[in-house]
Image (tube, rainbow, N blue to C red):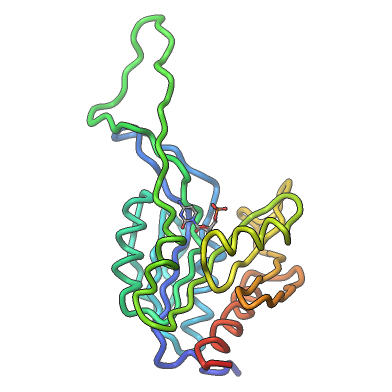
Length: 223
Ligand code: C5P
């Protein structure tokens, strides 16, 4: 059986990938499916937590027992996360958030003009939601967890990112051809701001999710 060690806790999870609109029909997006975030939501609910899942463009079915909030773009995701985090015990940013968005939104569909070359696409930075949530800590003792995909020097880059974001835990995946995106399985190292390092062997995304909740539950219990 599952230990109900998150009973009475409110956890907020982002999942999926943002879409940054260019016009009413076009966007810049990414290949995130939401599987890892949904696995986090299912496992947290199974451990007794009240779960808010902020879902960005995922086609997955709503996890049983979670409140699902939809957010399309990075800015919408930020609004939803900041609102839900206000009374959260733990916040997990599993969504793939676009680092940049088109500088302007065209309210009408952008049209091609004769044989003219298209105007270059101007991009601006999106807010770093994870860094903001970690800096804010809507409630004392709130645990903030991020994800990072790295292709090389995974631990060194992960440590640097953990420090830069200011989160408590960073789940670092090694990515490469066909790894992670859309896959049913995952392999990771979870780095802690306290210097801890937890290797999670290759396995189902639920398994990694449960290891993350183990680490969160221990920190919430003050261990
Ligand atoms: O900086 P990088 O994109 O590698 O960081 C990944 C982590 O930061 C993920 O947890 C992701 O959800 C979060 N993130 C964010 N806002 C952004 C970019 C990434 O919260 N604009």
